[in-house]
Amino acid sequence: MISAAIALYGRSNHVFLPEVFMPRRSPGEIRAQLLRRRTRHQRAPVIRGLSTSAKRQIAVFEREHGLPAGEVAHAFRRWNANAKRPYEDVDRFYERDDTDLRINDYHVRTLLEITIHALRRRARRELSAAIGPADGRFLDRSLNNPFAPRDLPWWLRRIGV
Image (tube, rainbow, N blue to C red):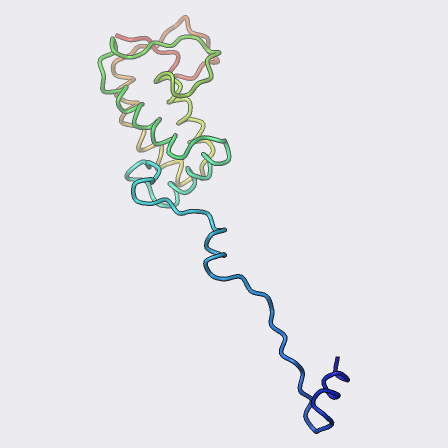
């Protein structure tokens, strides 16, 4: 290549090499390959009052477990609404084999519990503190069921008053 340049430009003290351009992608092409940001109207719901770190950990949990964005926030709102309703209005659930988390209020509490245990210590405390008032209301309007299996979580071993 150098010999070709010398032959092209003649013999001199300076060797001129032809310019070589590196192929480069345009900024628009790069932006097109990036993940799309959510716009204001497409934001996933979050639990208010939690730190940014806790919200980020919840989003990672949802992605890792194949849940739609905002599923934990939906479960949180549903559990809070369940705790405020009269017990007669709550969907009763005593079977253990149903796996759809959105079908009834006891499953949303199970999702919240799984999320709590998947988070780091500080985020776990924040989410537990946010769920605490709803748990208290649920405990106030229910009694322990002595005939329920002991391997069920506490919210499934309660009966309405």
